[in-house]
Length: 277
Image (cartoon, rainbow, N blue to C red; front, side, top):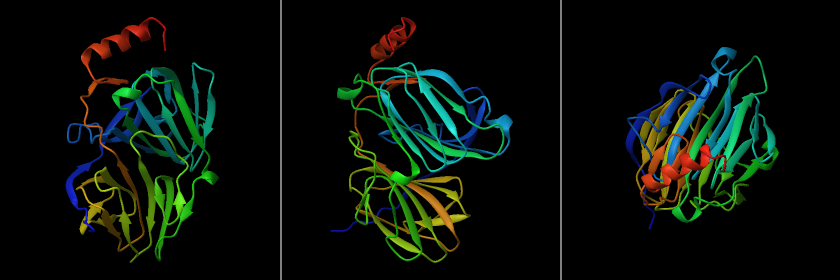
């Protein structure tokens, strides 16, 4: 039986800064929506003022979760203390599994122009929090583009749609990550795993209709459980639709460390200070 998802909660991005002063909108991970299991944070960074982003995100630690960076415009260079480096350009994705610990940096590759993208934090299950760190660096050309209905274009980062499978693989929360573009009057009935937590976030155009309700630009709609969600638009719009299997485990957070107990957080801090990352 098909069950329709609808919006059960609305959140507007909150202006803040992170890293060395990078200005951004925090959507998940703010007072109005602390988390949406398994999602811990969603930031949108967008500016054509170099002063808003030029200092970047100098070296910082992570343990116990995954960071997903999706670039729409601009270039960001990443590096870590394991010797990994990479260049994230427009349309590229990096899915980093921090696991037991990593020190990495994300620094702009430009001194002017538009820098625009997202960072999503995805929790790891208790069994995987101390695994070896790994990266999935995905260039734009490896992300399939499908047209599941008239006037609809979807980039499939993770999950499956219209016979295409996203390049992100081997993630415990079985994520769906879609960049959906809707032309005026277009409609899409999008299938999602029924028990996954899911949200829609409008980032281009004035609004989209999600589950029968209008969702405005820079507004996130938390979706009810269900097997499909109806998307439509009166004008051109673009939105993220993201879903993941909830872990239903205790969460202990301290800055860039996400574990299950306070004792594990203390251990993470001690390991970081002892240079064990």
